[in-house]
Image (cartoon, rainbow, N blue to C red; front, side):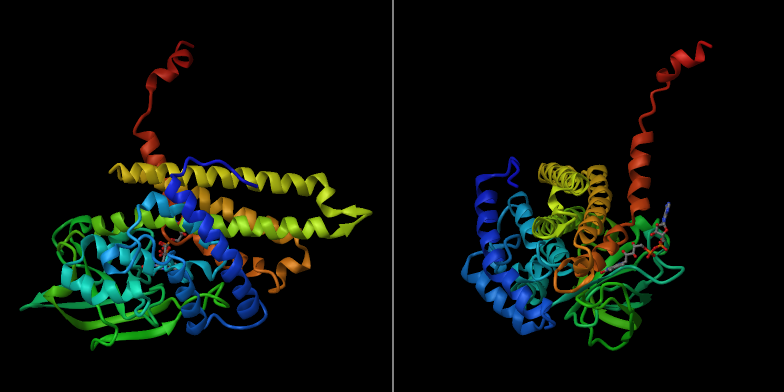
Length: 404
Ligand SMILES: Cc1cc2nc3c(=O)[nH]c(=O)nc-3n(C[C@H](O)[C@H](O)[C@H](O)COP(=O)(O)OP(=O)(O)OC[C@H]3O[C@@H](n4cnc5c(N)ncnc54)[C@H](O)[C@@H]3O)c2cc1C
């Protein structure tokens, strides 16, 4: 189903070429290499990346001088959606989390030397990275003010001590972006900073891999100890004590790119389920003739259209220089719930085949649940939306009631 969005000419052209790449290369590779019981090896990803480079689609969101295509954020967002149609799409195009958000962060606030050392090989796909912010109880999680990891200055070095978990990809990363308190006196929102930490620095310990739902396909989310880890002053990423502002600037766009990747996943699930009910007969006719199933598809398409429109609108706000925090929170919580519902419904429509790993939906189902938790749990976003809403209470609305 073709729907109209007011995307730019550049965005539409990119989407068309990305769709061809997904249909001709990525989805056949997914079927051959993964759904048939293979593995998402580095060699498979490297071959896909080579093809993406040849087609002029690789790293579209990153600056040209570091190896990307240097395109506008709004123009590449629809491409993220196409990429999301397969779990292989985002790594193939180098728009995969968490590297995508980490590269954006280094690009935003990194020094030239940091960009040369870390961003260039990250864009090239030679390096991977991890974002190390969340901590076990009673550290920073939904409430980031509870952050306990510290970094203290000792001469021209910083000494980091702390305990993190859910450091996605931390088990294989070439650089860890670690958030720590650098000013104990200040309010936590004004006293935290980011550091670039090579994982082979003395004192960095991968304590364990957290076993989790969705690990058949996914990356590791280890628990990491930082015990007296020393990094030089030049590894401070961005201004000292502005860690929360940096995290916020990272998370706004990163939440939207997540919404788009997951909306692509939901779109593919709809497409697979439609094909299944179209072919499958039961009770004397194709299942696709059953009105209740048709309505499920119609509702899914309608809600997904709302997600995609909403994300594009928030992206425009960000491009105009607005933080759009409430709009992004709305996108995140709405998209996470819509794509969870859609993938659950589409799995149901495929019957036993929805559970089998012959189709991609079983993987999608496992993968999508965490989206209601990472990048801020539903309730955390609803809390900030409610706060923004209650800033504007019109007491005059009670005029009629108070007359009685
Ligand atoms: C797959 C995955 C990948 C992740 N990757 C990373 C990563 O790369 N880097 C990183 O730093 N972190 C990462 N995380 C961590 C993630 O950001 C946190 O799990 C998330 O912020 C929630 O924090 P928490 O787990 O400590 O939950 P808690 O803070 O313990 O909250 C538990 C639950 O309480 C509810 N809740 C919390 N606050 C409120 C409130 N004010 N009102 C009502 N209800 C509330 C919510 O339902 C929440 O889910 C990842 C998590 C997952 C699952």
